[in-house]
Length: 291
Image 1: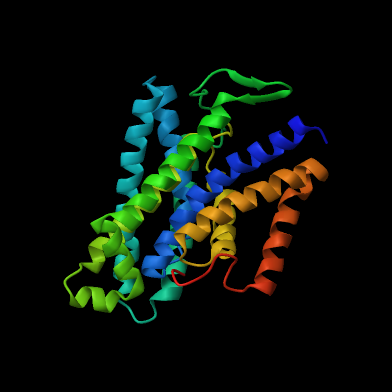
Image 2: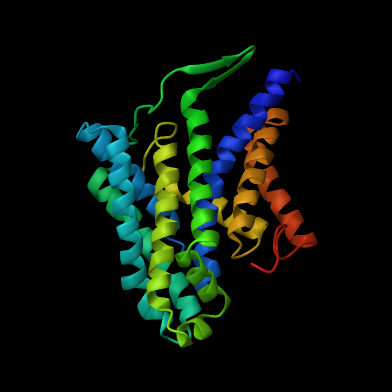
């Protein structure tokens, strides 16, 4: 393999991994704080894809304005899901299975609603960034490079919020002991809603970055939800940093599997690696005190 070919595999892996990290870190953040597995998380990505398509293509708005409004609306939808669907169930003793069933039902409802409103036709969003970066034999579209850089910046901001702000300290306190946090005056309900908003924004950002590269359709969130759960398991349940690291690792594994094996073996190799990790480290590669 040439140096350019090797670098292309690494860059493609990091680009895919940055999307997996965005989605997986949102799932990990919710689970780490509320112990809830949100099976409708992929549909937030799908909704964001349709929103940015509607604003940028149907209405013809500037893509950056369309992206900003999409993030605001997806964050509001995340808060609505938490307050209407999740919060009432958390008050019950047997809430765990009920939440799983409710979020699966919500996922099906949102997919069917998207089919009803937008139809089954696959939609495309134009590239935000034009041109190709050429470095010797290596050629990479600026759109793909922008995906990695913007995703990295978003995750860095989230890490700063979690570990360097009062909101982050409140979230981590609630994750460690919700009852003790409530006893000292931390409103756990508001914290849970805030976490769902942040998670929804991360999913929305992933959808916006992906939309010029893949077709927007009612089922686009399913595969990324599976990859998000794989990232969470690989990184350690509830670990934000572990999910980010695992996302990049999974992206690199997929990229190199495509480089050395047929494309259809990509998911087989990735999930085989995941199963092997679970056998050796059931709590994940990067699990620790945070998880």
